[in-house]
Image (tube, rainbow, N blue to C red; front, side):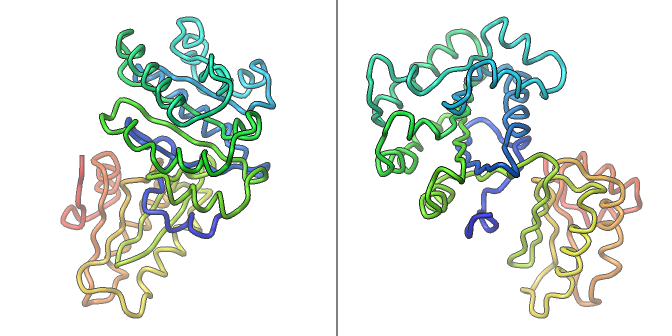
Amino acid sequence: MLANDEHHPGTLPVQHMGSGHHAFLCYDEDAPGWDVLAAFVWSGLARGEKVIVFGPPRLTEAQIRSRLRDAPGLLVAAGYERAQLELSSMRELILPARQFTADRQWQRIVEECGAARDEGYTGLRTYIDMGWVADLGADLDMMMDRECRAGHLFTDGFYSEICAYDRRRFPRPVLEAMCRAHPQNLLPRLGHLRCRYGGGTLSVIGEADAATHGQLTLALAELLEDPAPPAGPLTVDLLHTGFLGAECASELVRLPGRAPAHRSVRIRCSERHATLLRRLGADPATLDVTG
């Protein structure tokens, strides 16, 4: 984990990545990120978006295709057939230019967005493995400048992008700077849970299920035991929680009864999670439902 990764304010699971997001993903051999890519591709196809994958340059197209077979259903195969899903490379994108410049890459992305609009897609999303930097012999500072100044690509909400960094191929200071430069920071794998506390709010990010129940239980206990929380209610934020299992939901239902007498508890959640919590006996007055 990067030093600043745990506290990134835009941390979210890939399933919650939306149009207009510019997200950082750091992967390694322990969390290779293929499940994240498959989910990203599947979601884009399901939403009617055009999807372009710029995979690791060291892998062939056949190898990348094989790693996308974990995506559920037939959407990926159908995406290839109707060219809604394309596999490409940074070399191909910037042609006829041979050397990378931010301006050339931005120009081509804008062109691809225009083509996607003309073809009736609801958006364009790309997955860019940053191995292209070494493959093209590009300057690291030039790449980092591009990442810091790319905001104009996302302003209208049509385009979204994952920039995937292999932590074994980039210096740690570069990874930490790029994590900070991206508005969104993706969890490294599906089924992962991250609990982040600050200002009286516990953010539960990712999957709260049987596998992560112990992690959530510990985080809730630490929330209640904070010796000097700020005034006002203690809040559990589930807006970036994916799956919420019954066992974890039951812990949340019991939370108000375990809180100190002078502190109230609020649970900020979607209607989907609120429905489960109510069925398990949550007091509707404790729920702040959004969406």
